[in-house]
Length: 422
Image (cartoon, rainbow, N blue to C red; front, side):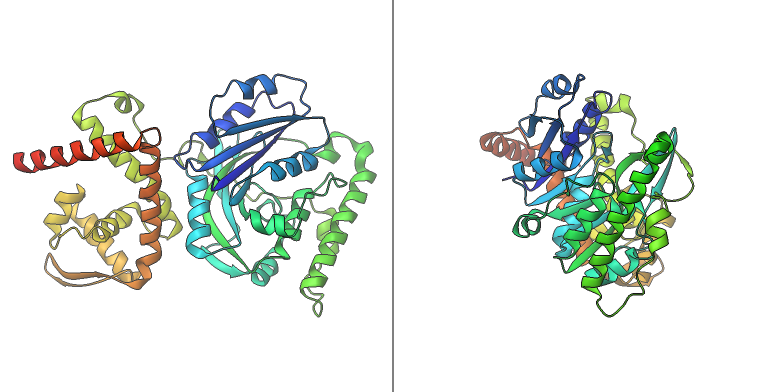
C-alpha cells in the first residue's frame, strides 16, 4: 500500500498533463501512486499519459461527467494512507510530498495546509496566509479562515494533504451537483471530522495564474453564478452554525457572495530564483569532485526546505545537522574545515541556534565547549532524519537487497582506505 495517493483529474489537458505527472513521479519521495482520471478527453491526453512508463502511475478513462465525479472516482481507486489532489495544469515542487508527509507524521496532524508559488509569466511569489508554522486546533483554523474564506489558500485542494481514513469513514465526496467552489465545500465537510490542522509554509505547488473567469468570459452566466454562490454560502453558513452554534460573528454574507476568489498580492521575484542553483554541466560529470558537488547540492536542496520551515538559514541547519551527527567539533577552525564554511558565518549560526534555544554552549575565545542540543531541536532532528531516509530510499530505489549489501561492503572498504590516505 503506497503512503500517498496523488489524484489528478484531466480533461483535454494535452498541453500540461505530462509536466504535471512527471512533477509527481520525479520526486525523490517514492512511496506513492499517481492516479490520473481522464474525464472523457477528446484530444491527445490519453496517449500522452499512456506513453509515460512508471508502475506507480494508474490511468483510467471515464465518460465526461465533470471534475467532481472525476475526483470521486480517484478517491474510490486510492489505496494510500494520505490523499493529495492536483489539477492537470499544476506542477508540484520537488519536495512537495516529502514536506507534506513529514509535517503530517511529526505533528500527528489530521490535515496539512501548505503555501504555494503563484506564477504569472516569468514572475513568481511565495504565498502563505500564516506567518509562522504551527499546529492549530480545528476551531482556531476555522476562525482564521472565516476572515477571508474566499482565499485560494483555504478553498483549494492542491495545497493540502488529507487522511484517507477520515474521508472513507465519513463517506466524504465531492458534490457533483455543484460546479463552483466544490473544492471549498469538500474542505468544509472534511473539517467537520478533524481535531487539528498543521500550517506548513513550505510552497508545494506552482499555481499558474490564467486570465479570465466564469463571469468574465460569459456575461450570460452571471445569474447562474450568483445562484451557485448562494448555494456555497448556504453550505458555509450551515457549517459555521454547526461548529459555533452560539456565535454568528463569523458570517460575512456579502464577502462570500460577491467577492471573487483571491490568491494573494503582488509578485516579487523572477521564476527560478526560488530554487537552489545547480550547475547542470557538472551534474553530468563523473569525476571525484563532481560526486562531492552532487552530494553537497542534495544536502542543500533538502536542508534548505527544513531551514525555511523553522525560520533558520541554510548555514544554521548545516551546523545543527553536524551536531546531530555527533561530529566532534569544538573550535571555529574545526567547524570551518568540516563544513567548508567561513568562520564568521559559523559563529553567526551558532549564535542564532543558541538564541533560538536549539543548542547550549559556553564560548571561550574561538572555542565552543560542551555544545548540547536542546529538546526544542528534536522536531528539526526528526525532519532531518526523514529527509535522509527519503534520499536513501530514492538512491536505492531500483537495487535488490543483495546489491545494497554489496554496495555497503564496498563503501566500508573505500572509507577505510580513504582514512588511511588521510
